[in-house]
Length: 152
Image 1 (cartoon, rainbow, N blue to C red):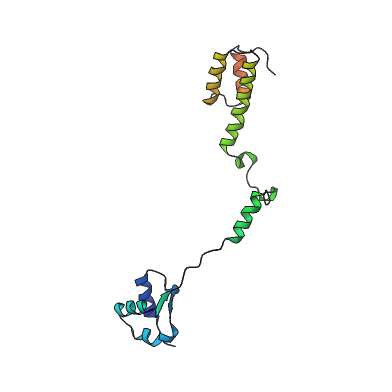
Image 2: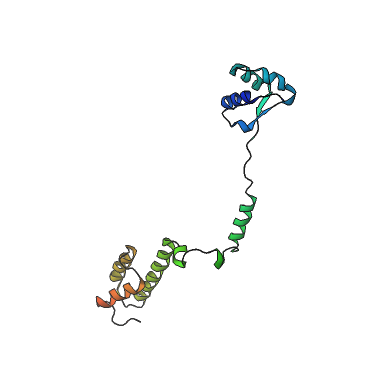
């Protein structure tokens, strides 16, 4: 077997790929072994005696199947979970739930004429600005400021 390591290394440098991806035509092995300069190797590349093997990617079939399963709710049981319920839910989801509860309550107070429109708007904007950390904080604020007397 003829040694063509030099030629493979030169071809790899010329083509900008790894040595393992360089292939040599077995029929033209003697011609390739004779080439010792870059120019000769470039000529052999042009002639097709030396070529580059295509890159092999990862099919990713198993990960695609896993993703589809998870979309359906599979593979999400207790054994797969790390972190508390709070850690697994985002801050935005938490905020959405909190603000919706407050807005529904404020709307209820306005519709039942417990608070007037001006007070409703002021409280709404405070809630939007994150003034109340929770629903109970909103109720406490209403009690302390004498806006509403009795709340559950």
